[in-house]
Image (tube, rainbow, N blue to C red; front, side, top):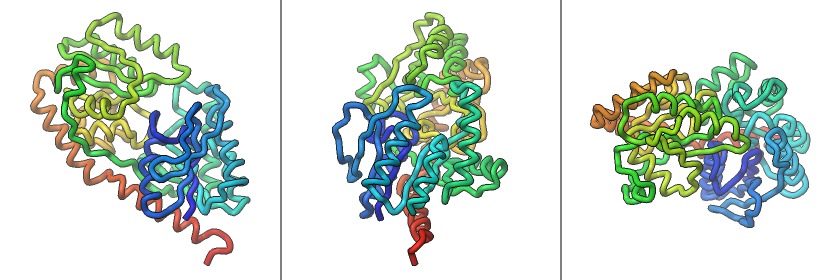
Length: 369
């Protein structure tokens, strides 16, 4: 089967959940004998193959409001004129306008809608309204809709009457040693960690403010940045207030170093609130990190009783102080979470679900028997 995956920044994965899913699922599909074409928007990238996947790198308009749509438009044009796949997986409900051209060409389409994108604070009223519209059109126009969390599937059923295919992300189960921590002057089990794009709905500002008001002794390492995030970045710095315990590290692209940071954190603070099953949370749980997560249905669905929870900066302060007061109990929660996601969130199972869905869509294509 020839499968196209479009609508993301592409691979190698360096940015977010969609890219992680494309790399993990696409490479496994390729390993199962399928021909996988991934559309990328990585300036300067000259790779044409990665882990068995064929890469097509195309430009995009470098503006927040136009980047995704401009790149997907070019990707669909290439799909229709060159790739001609049997099935297309389109990531991001914003790409709904490009579903009909693919279907008119006889290419079955599954759309991965992601989370409640219209709730993101970075979008103004017009962009939020567009995402509302696009979510509804994705549900109506696509041959299938993918939700990576049961909470998202429930929302799609209630809001649009569509039964989405629930396919989560996977959790890498890792046990790295701690020798990389010396590069950042950290000690195993004696720091708090945030890994997130600097966006309001990820609550980094609230985490930093809560920690800064705490009596914690371990440092807080904040890893992450975001395009077009100057204003929010300034708010996070202001929340830190010059506290020497708060280290705003910026982005780290070295996956081995990130794995080590997750695996040896005294606590991992996860403030994401509008997505579905978040890969960062899964990565932390798969590394055995004691998780302190923002209290929403999506995070409780994933972390379960292995999580501690916050909604306010005061909650953050108490949770971080508790982790330092009883690190053995926090570590036990981390081990519990790791054992749980090792069973419930396996990339091989995720890939099998994508493969099965692709086969169903192909079997329903006109002219197939």
